[in-house]
Length: 174
Image 1 (tube, rainbow, N blue to C red):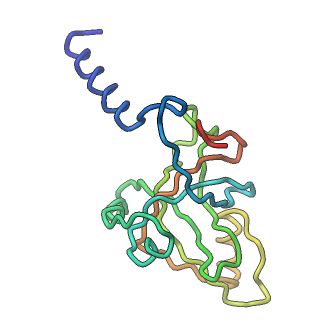
Image 2 (cartoon, rainbow, N blue to C red; image 1 turned 120 degrees about the vertical axis):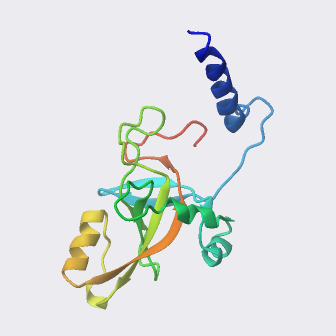
């Protein structure tokens, strides 16, 4: 390793270590967060919610209010850090995510996955059309048929997936 890269390597390792903290079993405390389930391409995933850019929703969910998350929404024509999450406003079903890590963890090959989600509110327009939708494609098809309405918001939510469609989980997830 060159002399110029060596200090950068150690600085990066120090920063990464600071975020990761001690590993479980080495005197570290554990945190328990509410586990949620969502659909991705017809299969369920598990996730946690830690931060929301909307104050009212943050209070309702008991998570951090982080208005700066809304800055992740790109200006017109720029690449996005956020994916879409479809939230059913009347609680008819669990949410639907656009993507998930596959496999879960450091070997994730899905380059479109992001734990930052732009909330799309889903409202059923016809009570007789209500059914379980398990993918973004099903949500969009229901919208095209006039069964539901979608409202793209400027609300960004940090919801990392902890167990993905492959059944694998992040380290420490039980």
